[in-house]
Length: 152
Image (cartoon, rainbow, N blue to C red; front, side):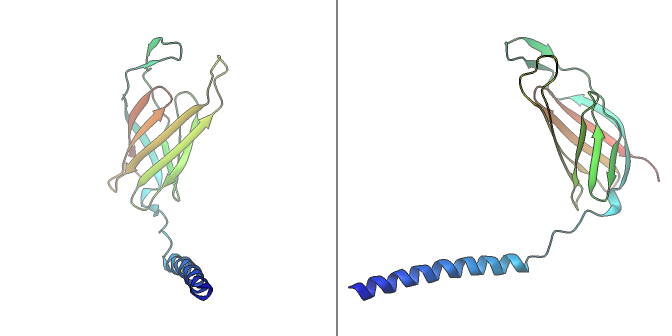
């Protein structure tokens, strides 16, 4: 009885070690993701900004209008993207090899009595034809932006 339990235990360990070994070998053979090409590099001029959420509710239950919002130019260089919001927050992130754009910013609460950090998340895509379409989602309001790459 002891021999069969010992054999089963050994086989269990062998199976576990084998699975981890195969996973490590497969991971080692996976080629790295290609870097974003220079095809998206440049400065993009804002064409439009549209409110996605027209209003927001404060923690106290008051309802307010989301303000009209603009943004500075979008700059892309070597897979890195950035722009500054109308409120002065600088957003930075990455551009993938197919033009997928991702940014995130967390700023301290506003000095006017804010109770939580100001979080901003940006997702979108840059097309090969030179247009960047993104959605900026904040704590209270969200916006869609459209930029066009300036001629080189």
